[in-house]
Length: 517
Ligand code: DHE
Image (tube, rainbow, N blue to C red):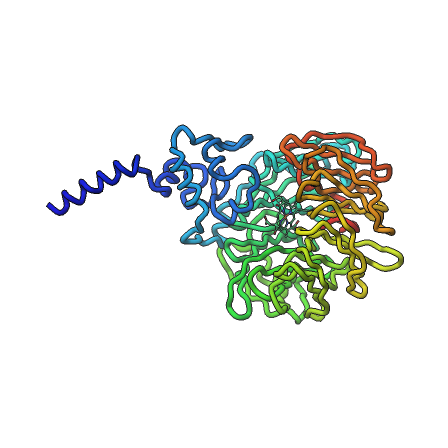
């Protein structure tokens, strides 16, 4: 009797409350899992977890579910799901996973896909200057264009994993390039063959990659799981998966990993712990490193087992967690941003401690910092993400010497040793269509370019000799504009789908003054 009363009142409630809605988890299993994976960690579509979704630009999630995503396989669900179901599903996708699956060497190795149709040629299949090849990442439809930096011919345009982030990294001779997506996929591409070699999922949610000084290893900084994955560049197999745990036992995400060529090491920024890690890529690493503890997980490269110093780790303790590093050209010092976004903390990597602090209010974007010689001293400049200015710092005495006022907060800075100018975008705010060109000596803005009024214009890369500057019109029907780097006149415009970063082989492998590292 009680049961039948209960069920009839539930039925009445359901009637009053409107149509019965399916649980978001059920909706996910029925409509999303086939492409995005049973565990929301991705499949042919990207992972649908807050760590990834929070970084996606463009329309909000409910719109994407309802209307689909242009230029991708994502279909529209407005005909199949009600508005409330779409809203509930979007909210559910924004909740963290209950359980992070293991993603160690075994799982990484199992994800590896080596292309059966790839064959390595003895020489490039094109006749351009191999050192003047420039890649343009097109985030609009997840492709990379391979440009001949002399003729502007597009030699190839290949599909990348979804949502590439950070700079692709070239092998030291400039033949291979490695590209990472936010879902942790690392793609290896042979520029000589114009072919993908293969790809592997090195993490579940990743930040960036770094190449070792000798080109043998590629480090992948991960948020999920909290590890650093080191891949063999030869065959994309995992060589080492390092758990990132601070001295006091706190696990930490890795904000970013960088190559320190002169030090023959990787430098890691830890997101959740007041430590910087240095990981040796030299088998004869200095004794300042702690002993190398090699976990012999299945699938590890055997060759490293005998190399005691390889991947040995050194901790540098700091007063608070810092990230977003700028390195001096000799890699003896780094400046990291303090958590409050108000200061830069200078760390001497050789002695392993903080040596100075700089007032840098307005959230400096030190990772975009560049340095050059000015009036006999070496200076560096950094944009700020919250203020329309560039700070110029004397890196010989660690003083902020000048502030250049811009039309709004910027994201990227670029120059070249042969160029008299620094190029600074205005990424945020109403003047996002402006690109400042600044004299390296006088620090005056000599020209503000506005090639596409109303469109975001950002990120610059130079050709090998610095004579041309390539600028992105960062829109879905965008372009890469080639400027004469001296006259500042437009030379040509190459249509592209939301181009972001451009990367010239020579500038990257020689660590050109004025490029990002
Ligand atoms: Fe990036 C590089 C971190 C948001 C486009 N970005 C980097 C690097 C780091 C970093 C640590 C250096 C890696 C490297 O190249 O090896 N980025 C972060 C963030 O923490 C931040 C602010 C928040 C986040 O979403 O993770 C962030 N980045 C963005 C964007 O929103 C951008 C504009 C668009 C996008 O692709 O997501 C963006 N980041 C880039 C690009 C580079 C980059 C194009 C490489 C620049 C270069 O010239 O080398």
